[in-house]
Image 1 (cartoon, rainbow, N blue to C red):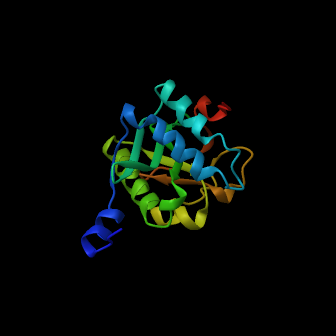
Image 2 (tube, helix red, strand yellow):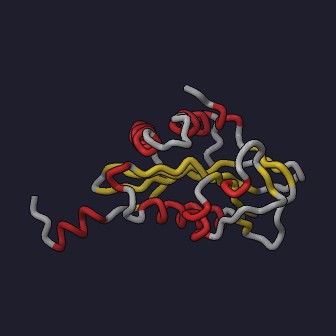
Length: 179
């Protein structure tokens, strides 16, 4: 294969765009592959994405495409906060094919998803993940907003307004999907 500078750029280039119906099978495959060997995963992330889609609860669903192949995906769905705060969302799952990890694709998916949330007028976003990774996007553990039964340092929030909710967070029931 010729990997001249032009071709190298083409190989490494990707676009971030909304999912289409023709992406669904590829999103499933990417999600399975991305979480296959992750120790903290119960390998249900692909079922969560499917259940969110079927419940019409995917507020934002973006793919990263490289050479006309889906290589990454991020899902965003509404969450409920016990203090009745509204317009908050949960980010995840976010997946990148193992062969395309550590190339900035996950970061670009994050940035685009957060940008789209802001455009929608969202008040904020929560996620469950590695604090050392997600802090670069402004996420941090917030003592007044909790997800039961998870270590608090891994449940993080990013408010788009000066007000931070105070309460327990509940994700969409699709997060209980097992198959």
